[in-house]
Length: 326
Image (cartoon, rainbow, N blue to C red):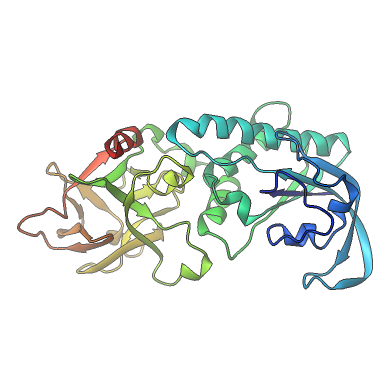
């Protein structure tokens, strides 16, 4: 068994330095003492220690009895910072995962525990990260089969999309992902504006309440957060996030109120089925008098207004949307 830690540190901390990110690793073990001061972390590889001593508990108090575990630390590549940077990120992240698996295999570790710090997801498109892990573990290259078992340790207090991404890649039925028309991904843009429908999936766990995940308007992005803004209008009528197709745009009530992001349901599914009219309005198919409506930067449903200026939408590709920002 080997512990694999991905964080945002590209230089290994000095022995006396303290860290909040990866605290459970750097502060509870002697890993940073095993290398030279400020050891650079390989860009596409990792630092490996066959015998790392765990010396503190979760409260950072000394253990009565320490124990050893093989450990590997890798710095996750920084996420895309523009629309043109996505290919660079995918290439570096794929190489990083493959090399982690190769290092573990070289040292005869076929059971891997992967811990990813919140900082390593700060700039990353997490759906892409989860997809690349599945690709490297099961689908392509020389790394499928190198690990018999992989356990992903994901914080329950981080952004919901991290859990959604890994769940849909490794737990959801394959047809949920395979039957989606990926080339139909669109941003839903308020007509004559630069703002598009944005799911607040970057918010921390305390925002996840019984009212679902907030959805509002935000400027179109070419960074990792673009995965919060690309939607698919499925044949069933649901508007789902292309990166997280298990959740969809839902009205809270059939006659008024806000819209939010919710898992697909059959009961009350009429609150999740939308039609797009030729004039650009979007309405609940089962309640055709209720239209998707922008109220400042929030979204809701309302009856058709006389001007319709806040009820007309454009379905644009990411490239079209980003060009409008210039």
